Image (cartoon, rainbow, N blue to C red; front, side):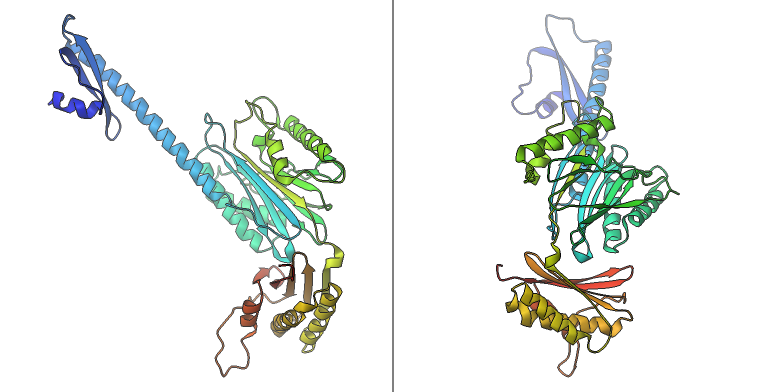
Length: 444
């Protein structure tokens, strides 16, 4: 029976030795036989004894357990790495007034997977939330917690909460996940119309702002306590975000390693950004993708102890001449006034060919807002590569498109918006809601 089992256990292409004395020792892992070891002795040597059989069995047992552990470890590392990668965004959005680029590097093979993540979330008013975080620890659990916190951050962002409130709720969520679930996170909101950025920090390395002239500065943001500590207030600061500047958010794997502390790494990062900007001159910002690659080139052979998440945002902003903003009293005359104001703005921008459609859609959306609003309704038009209209009111009830019957006198407003607009949507805010739609310009 042993001789018959040898070809199967040894595998194809490995002939069974003949004319020798042999010991067959199956390599038995935790759940299955994963191979066999064959110990061969020529006939001129003494025959095997019981003690030889015991040694062979011990060697086979330890070998099988070692191979089994290696396979299990490799499988766990692969699953954790794939889990983390699938939880990171496949692609970044393309919000108005800002350009984005990102990088993610897993840790070296000698280290286990971490919980770094980044995100860019479009917000009402053409704003965008920029998020980067790092779950403490290196395991599959860290990757799973990262996914939960990222999902929570996306949900909180859609509620349009201030950055410090987002971190506060993330802190509560981390405490619900467990007493030892901790993470660092930096949450920033960029407003391209106001050219301002609001940042709140939870124990994360500070961001670096690269100005158009080549000056790189580490932003002074209150450090805060990590998420999961509990009972700590977070503070937000509002800073200028000049056009042409680049904001760099990153995790500590980029600036901290066994060879350098975090503040030394941050200073090296600042110097690297300034040196890269000098190559393109004072009037031009370095290409965003190339800038990210150049930043990662600063890593040395001993700097891959942790995974790295990197998010870069180039602020283009929206010029004041491309923005029209009005307050309308919630009265019956509001839709007609909105049409006239929209027509005047389109004429000023040379977009008269859009007047008929835009006036119709503005009238429908403002009519819906006036129906439920108690305070003045806001109307804003933004001209970039597209035309965007935003109508805000103090009612939290979101509009829903419905199919009107032939005998109904109303109910077709959102149907028209859906048919004529390139895109449209509604977002609930803490103070009400915003309904928006976008129209393609002639160049598109």
